[in-house]
Length: 480
Ligand SMILES: *Cc1c(COP(=O)(O)O)cnc(C)c1O
Image 1 (spheres, rainbow, N blue to C red):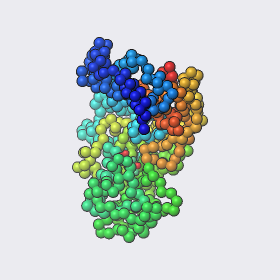
Image 2 (cartoon, rainbow, N blue to C red):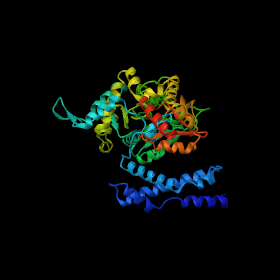
Image 3 (cartoon, rainbow, N blue to C red):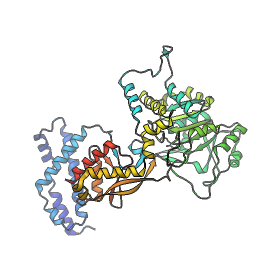
Image 4 (cartoon, rainbow, N blue to C red):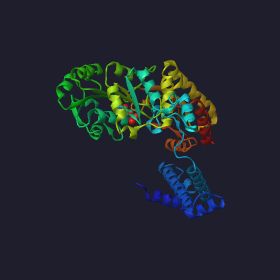
């Protein structure tokens, strides 16, 4: 593919790159103390690698100035590598896990930490983190108390359940519930609900790991109550309903409602478990209806599980609500100790749940609910204020425009719901969309954006007011 001429230009360009030793020496002369020789050399190798890649990209853009690039001053390139290495060394000293600006428009972005916490949750977490707490101490009786008891009573109050329990995440909750309710026995699941959540969480695998035997019934698109009924044997221990959170079967379909399943359960004495996935506690303005834990409990489902950091808008946790008979059995199980929550999560979860005691307060205080219901008009205004912050020069250099876009709920919730939004789109004149996206990821704070049709899309939905200022400053810097 590469023509001999291009190859020549390439190798002459690469010859301009400095040696590792040379830059390490310059770093030391510039007083790069505090880093070992190995760390210095490592940073320089990375810096050279980045610049080799940039040189290659420039060549491949078959720009008419390939020759011009070849004449890129050797001295400039050395300085660029040196500065890059310095930046790498600085960032090596920073925390690895850090805040980023989410410009993807995906509200519950699993890779970006799902739900941001409410102020109330952050204050509660901070207070408990600073010192001692009554984590397992009953202040009324002056003796050992139960971890998580406040969260459990709030959950009962909010869902109408007899009992509640919290564990590390919803994956753990599902597995733990199946293990407790159906170890060495059969579990009936519809073929339409054999969901894979992501990674290695697939219902059939979870079933095997929980020591239960999966009995599939119905077909991918249609399952009826008699399919469940016909599959019940002496070995059946559980009827499972799983939320098809990240996919939808559309067209000629039929699924068994939780009411029907519950009726069958009462008739046959086989208990029910429902994995809600996201499990919202209220209806969110402008979004499709999502089954709530309250509805499941009302329908008489024995055990219901959902995530703490999806639509609920709290910290990572797995929430279990349902009949005391089963929940108490789980609480006494030896696995409970492995799955229990730490004090920081409990503090944040309790504060999040307290907001739900008043649904209006929940909408106003919980960032996930706020972001999901932000009106498109408001997002347009925010996009315009980002443009204003950038100013004319930066807008022109970066090819900035305010455009309509669509985001997603994320976290495997409501896969078909499109969130109508506004974005500032960038099609820069001075570098490719891809390299702008890379620069954004490496900014302080890092900005995660997506590329669509060769433009960088900055969706405003998940960007907080104060972050708009930071983003404006970062973009101005790039346009210099
Ligand atoms: C997200 C999800 C899970 C896993 O929940 P985590 O809190 O991420 O562990 C399980 N089941 C369903 C249906 C889900 O949507």
